[in-house]
Each structure stands twice: as C-alpha cells, then as structure tokens.
Image (cartoon, rainbow, N blue to C red):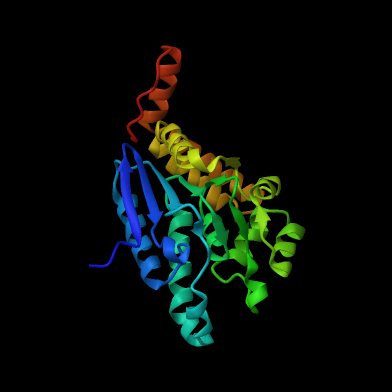
Length: 261
C-alpha cells in the first residue's frame, strides 16, 4: 500500500495537514491534490476542528511547485480540463473554507507552493525558506491562481517584478512586502504555528466563520456594499450566544467559554 500523500492529524481543536512527498520536495500532482481536497473536506466537516495548519514534510520544502515532467508532457486543452481544473478547485476550497488556516512554510515554497500559501489566512515562514513564482523561467506563468491572488495581496509593482523576473526571495523579503506574517526559526516553526492556531481556536468558531466571510466577500465589493455586508454580519453575530457569553465574561472578569452558537 502506497504511503499517504497528505498526513492528517488532530491536536485538540487544531487540525494539521502535512503534504508528504519529501523525496520530490512535496511537489503537487493530481493524486496529491485529490488527497488534499479530501482532507480539507473532512476537517471542514469536523466541528471539533476550529483551525487548520498546513505544512510540508521534511526540512527542505513546503511545496517546491508542480511536477515539471508532468507539465512538459501536457498540451493546453488537456491541462485546462484536467490538472488546472483540479488545482483551482482545491485551492479555492482552501481559500474559502470557513475555518482559519495557517501555512507553516518550512522550506521552499515556489510556484504552486507560493500559490498555495496565497490561499491561507496566515503564514509563518522558516528563516531558511525561499519563496517565489519562477514559472516565467520555464516559459510559463503562475496558473494556479497566483497571477490573480498575488496582485491582490502585495503591491502591484512588486507582484509584477516577481512574475516577470521569476527570482526567488528570502523569508525576510517576503515579510517586507506583506506576502507572509513573520519569520520564525525552523526548529520551532511547527510549535509556533500550532500555538497561534490554539490561540485562534479559543475564539468563537461562529464569529470566526462570519468574520472570514465578511473579509472574503467584502474584498470583492465596492466599499459601500462591503460596509452594508459588514453591518449585516455583525447583526448576525449579536444574535449568537457566543457574543453575549464574551460580553458577560468580560464583565465578570473571567475567560469566555465559546461554543460556536
């Protein structure tokens, strides 16, 4: 029996998904994407899991990109209807999942690896990690959502430079341009990612869900529409038991017990 390409673990209210192809630097192929899709669906459906952490196996790569031999063998229509269709669907699932997601970037995150972290809410990066979208050096360009997500998340001129030149950047530079949250030592990366996940998991899962929706949907709306959307969402929040529990706990000087209702 072949080894699982996605390792799925649970630690309390935190789910941990590990892309497990260290011999090929955790490169993404169709079977890996299929397993990732199934693992995300399972964690999305599990009410006990409130936050999801995503990382790569080994100490060299988070995801070093796609399988170049596979890409070289593809023609346009087949690629569009097969691999591209799948990777866009899986990445969109990750991006729109109602639970907060954290990327623990333990090494190379190139091409599809950078495109993958663009779909995560928060990003912690090992000091040794290298990031980038080098597709242009292969006569390609980022086609797993990267060309569109990158220009929405970092300054436009910097996004264009990354895509036009295709050079790798350091973890520190990734922080400087706002691509990731912060750099941490590789030895403590997973622990810090899990600690951050536990801190978030202590918040109301219902409020996190509605907040993620307000942020996600509002980003694609004109400001006036986004503000109306926010107003409706906060109204829903004030109908929740968690909102009143939080206020009572503050007044009673105790820690709140959020139940997601």
